[in-house]
Length: 82
Image (cartoon, rainbow, N blue to C red):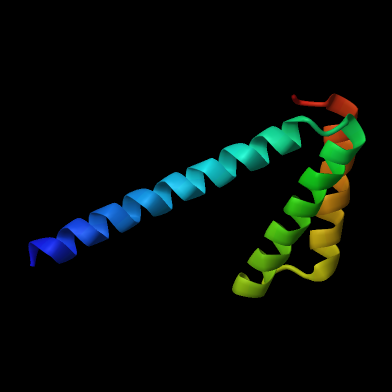
């Protein structure tokens, strides 16, 4: 019984460390992108997020997802929030 608890704890700790390491690597890569590529990356992520939400809730359409992605690219390029 205790072995399984220790295994689950070690497994979750390794998984957490792996996820955090991947997140920090992705964050460092994104922060190093030029202004336009950064805006496009955030816009694409926004598009996929809204599109996934529209599939899940069935309330929005693909047009809404595209417009959200385009708007996000324009706003992030114009104001460069980094």
